[in-house]
Length: 157
Image 1: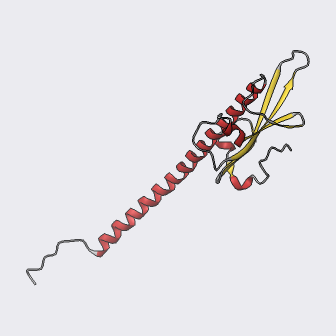
Image 2: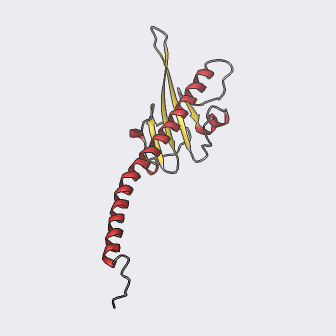
Image 3: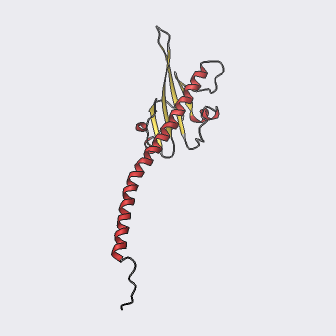
């Protein structure tokens, strides 16, 4: 028995290393997952703000004879469907095929100064996220898409 070669690790040492690696992986996973979620919400918020910018551009263009997109009139409000803004070329960011939404624009004029102001209300969703009735989008406005149940077909509540 004198000539036995006892190089290598014991079973206990191998199990200890596996447990330590599992703990490190769990800590990493629980740190990275919320960061990824936040990044995805921020990306959605950026896309939503691009849609608001496109509606503002369309509304400004419609104040002149050569408007780029004709809004749907709902009483005294204007409604731009996301698809119409894409078709008009106002949304040049990547393909937004899994997004649906609308921007409702309320135009008001001060009777004494005759200043015209516009207020914008965005409803938009994709497979995972949604915003509902906001005029500026941040990560805090982005919610789970299942919470936005009403149709996004240019309706005004």
